[in-house]
Structure formats: structure tokens, C-alpha cells
Amino acid sequence: MDVKEIWERAKPIIENNVSSISYDLYIQPLMPEAFEDGTFILSAPTTRDANYARNERHFPHIDDAIKKVAPLVEKVEIIDAVEKERRDARNNPALEVLSQEPIIYNNNINPQQTFANFIVGKSNQEVAAMAEFVAKNPGKKINPLFIYGRSGLGKTHLLNAIANYILEDRPSTKLVLTSIEKFTDDYVSVIKQKGDFGAFREKYRNIDVLLIDDVQELASKQATQEEFFHTFNDLFEHKRQIVLTSDRHPNEIATLSERLQSRLKSGIFQDIRNPDIEMRTAILQKKAALEDKFLPTEVAKHIAEYSNKINENIRDMEGHLVKIIVYAELNGHTIPTIADCDTALADNSGDAETARVGDMAARVIATTAAYFDATPDEITSKRRTEKLSNARSIVAYLLTKYLEAVPLTEIGEIVGGRTHAWVIFSRDKIAKQLTTDDVLKAAVDDITSQLEK
Image 1 (tube, helix red, strand yellow):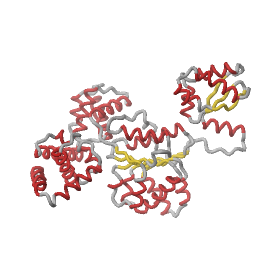
Image 2: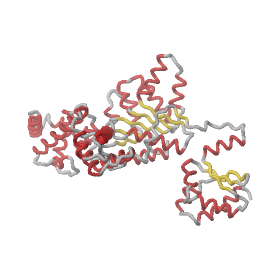
Image 3: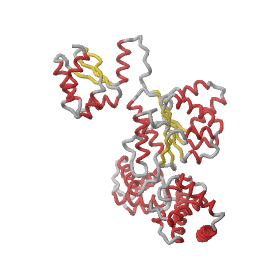
Image 4: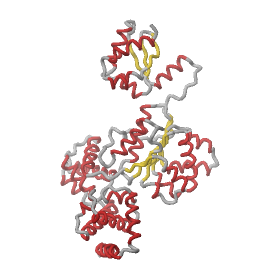
């Protein structure tokens, strides 16, 4: 019997001993490669598929079935696509084989930022699912993927998670993870040194996956926008995967050329929102565990509530956790207490702007709610009555007035997790109505006077 016949006879035996899902996902894709020196070799299409086939739930059934069909087999080996390429090259030295090492044009991929340690909750479950889909199916349905939201909520973590997954699954993938700042630096360097644009374009265009952070930085870089537009076009037309992140929606990126803005809108947009207290608590406990520290739930929740009150992002919240842990250790506490938290957080001058934004937002919501005989929770709730809808629109209008530097996505978050599009619509609606509606104008003037007392 040849290797194909051995495998075809073994497959039905395996099928009888594993679930139908396992058989379809992990057994069917295996291909017989060779039987040499007593070893029967199967190949899997990806590293991940090979690992699943090798695990203790599947491999014993594969091993038993093949040895039952072919008693001369002493050992069964499962190799992945990269190992197959190396094997083929050894067997045929004249064969031209692509590089076996991951082709990465940067060294800034963080191996610690994976899907496994990305905490998922209501505020980010959609974007996490989309990022994982892209990692598993690069260049397919979701392309480009544009992730936006305020700084420190996990956008860069997701870029790294995508990179880590793809390079584990397909090690020979040509992948670039970079930022607009680095893209600009490379571009300007070529211009200043009158260098080789061919090498620059080879780096950014002859690739399979481009993951690029901080797209909002394109706003003030007209020449870079032109080069990035052509890079984007080239990759998109060749069905290469593109994932972009920004602290705001493309509509909010000032001075972005119309055609680049149009290109960026050709894919799928997904925002990443502020976590709620429950999710903040989970993130804190996960972060503590990664540092080999135990953080009691009541202490984690106390920090989460403080962080939520000042509308803090995840990165800053984790920074506070580190400070609390250090403070507790200095005071001889192996496990932080609520008292440690309160003392460590008592002087956070670096939070002044965050606190100012949180305080102003709270005042606008509370003052508007009082005017309409409602509560702040009703303003930020999902309830839809004419009174509450009007009040929310006024809140959006006033927040854009008093917090001009705050991205509209963040203002949407403040008003109960609403979208930037809702903020724009509400702001513009109130601004227009103020020119004709005296009752509305009186209400806004009254609320404004209360806020400015």
C-alpha cells in the first residue's frame, strides 16, 4: 500500500472515534506525505491545525488507526506547512522555497498582547470578535478593519493580538505592524537622503498584512497622506489585509483628503468604548494576576469605581494599580487594602485633565437632568421618551461646547455609550433649532447660566 491508501483506510477508523466536528476540522485537512524509516508523515495546513491534531484528544486515535492499517509503521509524525516546505527543500535542493522565518519588518510586536489575555466585555465584544475573525481569515470579508476609540482602551493590544495569532498560525506571513508616525519617519527619511523609494515601497506594499496604529496622525501630514493612499490602494487591490486604529472616526480627522477618507470608509468601522465597572474590575484582577499579585474583588471594585468616576482609560487605570501595589508593599502589605488605595490615589495631579473632563460632564448631565425633572441615570439610559431625547441632545450640544478637545467618540461614551454619529446629529440638530425655537433657546440659556455660576 502507498501512503495515500494507508491514510484513506485509516480515516474511517479515526472518524468512528472522534466527534464529527473534530474530524471535519482537524482530521480531514491532514495530508499523507511519506512513509520512510518506519515513520508515517502527515502534513497539516497550518501550525495551529498541526498542534490540534497532535494533542492528546486526537493524536492517539490517528496513531492507532494508522498502525492498525499498516503494522510496519513504528511512528506517526504530523508536520505543519513550514516544516513541509523545509522537508520538500531538503528532498529537492533545486526547489526554490520562500523564507521559512516570519518576514517581519519591525521588532515592536508585543508577545504579551494576545487574544487570550484581552478582557472582553460589553464595551468591546464586537471589536474583539472582528479582530479575531480578521486574524483567522486575513484578506477576506472584513477588510479593511478600522478600529476607533479614545486612547488607552485596547486598540494597540488588538493589533498585537492579530499579529501574534497570524504569525503563530502562518509563520511565513509577511506582516508589518507599525504606526503612522513610523511610516512618516521612513517616508521622510527616504526623501531627505534621496534614497530608494523602491525599498520603501517594497517594505510596505510587498506584504500580506498591514497593521497600522494612530491613523489620526495623518491629519497634519499632507505628503504622507498621498503616499499612504497609494500604499493602501495597492494592498487593498491585491486583497492584502489592512487593520487601522485611530482615536476618532475618519469623519473627525481634520484635513484628511477626501479620497483617502473615502478609501478608509470602504471597510468596516467598529468603535471600542469605555469599560463598565464590572469589566474594569476584571481587568484589574487580570493585570494583578499577571504580576503574580492577588487583588481582592472588593479592592479591585473600589479602584474600578474611582476610575469610572473620573472617566479614566484602561492604561491609566492599570498605572494606578501599579502605584497601589507598590504603596501597599512599602507599608508591609502583601495584599493591597482599600485604605492603601485611598492613600495612593489621594494625590493624582496627573489626572487633573481627566478629572476636569469627568467633572464637567457630570455637571452638564446633572444640570440638564434637573431642568427636565429627570435623573442623570435617565439621561444616560436607553429609555426613549420625547423629554429624555431632547435632554440628551442638549447634553451632547453642551458637551461639545465645553469639552471641545474631547473626541466625539468619548462624548458619546459619556452620554450612555452612544456613537459619534449620534453626537454629531444631536449637536447639529440643537444648533439649528436654536435659531428658530425660542423655548429651546430659553432652556439652553438657563442650563448654561447654571453651569457658569
